[in-house]
Image 1 (cartoon, rainbow, N blue to C red):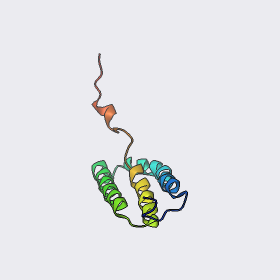
Image 2 (cartoon, rainbow, N blue to C red):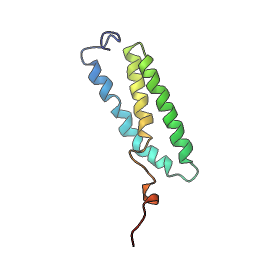
Image 3 (tube, rainbow, N blue to C red):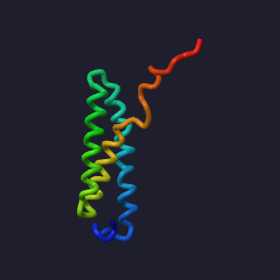
Length: 97
């Protein structure tokens, strides 16, 4: 990968950490968007997952180092919008009384 994309010496490390910048910056605002009453979570999360899949496919097809960095940055944005776990588990748990 380093040779085909003509990466610099620290290019692989840069491609790894550039994912986390938008991930950290977008995670809280995306959760705030999900809590708005007019936003439908099924559409919001479904659209973000679809876009994440498209960007991940584009990452495999990129032919340049700059394209890899752009794809990793966009993946950080759209992966931050997906919850880390099941966000509706509190409604599905049963209580033992």
